[in-house]
Image 1 (spheres, rainbow, N blue to C red):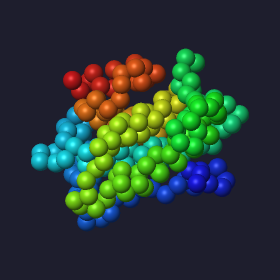
Image 2 (image 1 turned 90 degrees about the vertical axis):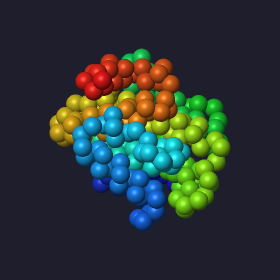
Image 3 (image 1 turned 45 degrees about the vertical axis):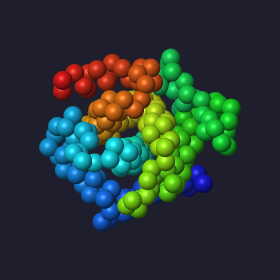
Length: 216
């Protein structure tokens, strides 16, 4: 099932992944939102006392997926087969798609196609109740953290593409503050729990240093 539907300019995306209201994960999400409201992102990403790390990572991964889903939605008109014939983050970094199941050997494709593959794959993982259980008491699989790390590593690539190839469009739309806050939150979260290898973050290293040094 494709992540992007119909007319690109209509920005009709795959539905937002909702966390069931009244569930413990919903309470965790509300806690995260309340702490974010304080403006202290370093504090906001910390594991709340007495909470399960897997559950905290799961809730935040869903939230980042929804944020990136929305941010990319604002620039889809500018990210086309013609303008972005390869999935890149500047001239030095190019990403080829493979999911290990349907596409085993990495393929070179346009950025919109790559992001379509990527977001569809992430949605499938989030919808898998054995990987992301929404019911209380259902344990997380032993490989949950490695799946979450792969999801976050791939979501980072969408941020990297937007910053390198579409930041002018983001500024025209006056979305840069929204993008910067979302990315800063994402980086603080993955740094707090060592969820993405440093070498994967190199395409945005300068920006990461700039956004994070103020808060040390």
